[in-house]
Length: 118
Image 1 (spheres, rainbow, N blue to C red):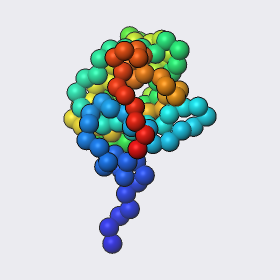
Image 2: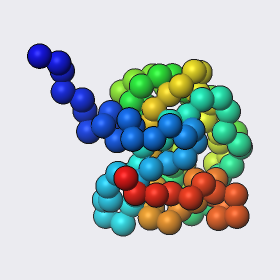
Image 3: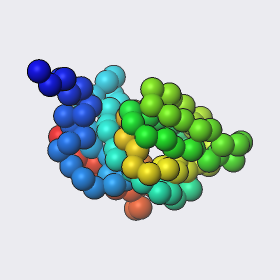
């Protein structure tokens, strides 16, 4: 008998794009998203909200103006609002993100990825 896939794995298997958050649920006015990533995301901040990262699979470093944070599977970090940061994935990583509904992933609507529900 094969092991059951987690809800996250099932959602992550539905797409291949990198750095393109997919909404999988909502929670008190927040989007709960999964994203696949590899390499370096642009430096940015979120002036009005914290940024929640939970690593599902892989390894990432979140570079911040206050120092770097290394994360592996099951580890999470919340970047405080207004802090400049960028995630760097060391090989393909899978991350759960939580942001206020409509918050752009780059902190700027003009440069943000379009978020879709899956």
